[in-house]
Image (cartoon, rainbow, N blue to C red; front, side):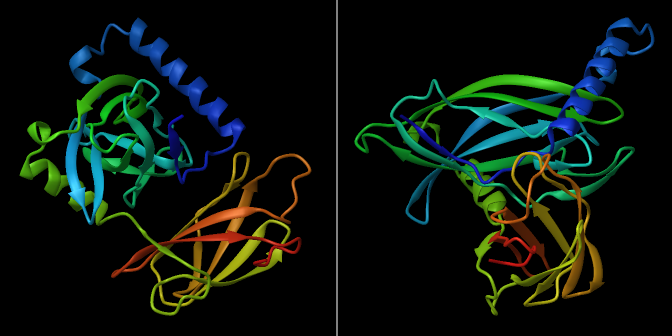
Length: 281
């Protein structure tokens, strides 16, 4: 069985339903409009690229190219949008696969703030073969969304045999360039990188996070059903985050979070587990 490891968490079911309903409404408007034409809708293309071996690991890349001004979404889209959904089930000789998520942009949107990418993104994919003497054939079915003035759900399929004939210098450099944008894994209290030092609950729906170094932004992700608002800076090392939604009767005890910390020099990810009070366990 192929092991697929993703460090992603989804926004709440309510947000997903609202987003899907919005997209259905948009699709109806597009189909019935006599004003909009196909050339006026945002468009995108996908392909798999061969990254070769980078630091002793085999890599591919998922490239999404969009029209100028269009955007697609990160694993946690923010106030609206749909994260990409990757299906690798038809791949051959694939033992293990890990998708790396480049740091997203914060993008102003009529619905609020979204997290995603403009015009072009490459998701690096670390590959392990079942049989290292044979090449891996990647087959990807991708469901995603792109937005400009309108948001359009998209679906595509692409495949690639990972052997020397499909590798070129430009594709390898593109995978490396986006791999460099992937946040570094950090640990609680690590002094040499931006990381979370402590969490103090300020109320039933507000957490105060302190960091080991000054940062310029902070993104908090929780498991399915938990949704956190944009972080507000009290200082460069103290940030408050509101819990906007949580599952019914859900408690903070045992809640697993991912904190992405952004500074001018570094971006890091720290995994956390909270105790019943909302502090780090």
